[in-house]
Length: 264
Image (cartoon, rainbow, N blue to C red; front, side, top):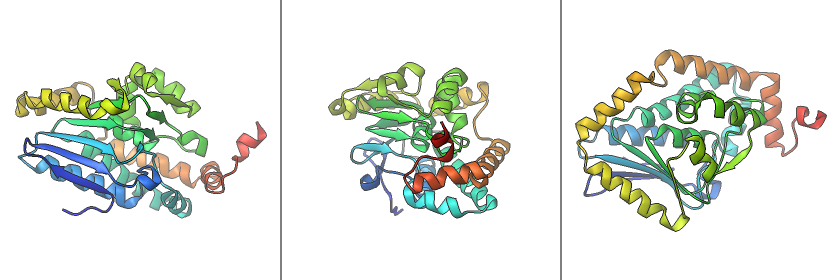
């Protein structure tokens, strides 16, 4: 399979590796990135030789969420077009979150908005001490709708009440404290920390691991069933098409404060 925005490899030990390759835009999403991640994880999930999958970003960032071209596109979308875009994002996150193989996020740098969703969708997350995180949607008059089942599963509603509402940035140690990541290491130790976790994962029974993942999903209500996907995509579509959402996106694209920030 060929991809425009990432590389996908499978090592001899059955370790699949997905690396986002848009360092010039901090590995931000565009429509192609969403499609590439979706296809890569579904392909690796179907590959019987693959035992474990790691996900990281090239350069200094993990993923900075939606890129400028995508923000410009959704600003012009109708509510129905925004609903379809939300469905595509939901499908991508489902490809990661519902993958039967163990998935490991190696968070090498900033994870913003949808990038946080990717971290939370993985089973295990290790972060560089240089990583920064933010759920920045409300600053644009939007909400982290589609990623919310995964993020809520990771950090719980109490922490979400702070970080969903303030959109503030927080560091790797705080991400570990609230449960978004499992481990924080120095930047030059990230690859070794990931290799140690992969080694432990490879020592376990693959069928048992898939069953354990299903057990967790079943007993904690699996995220993103079809009804949730539709509801959440409609939620973000409605806000993107609303006057506040349009003002938030426009202010971001025009590099100015939104109307509500100017008033405060």
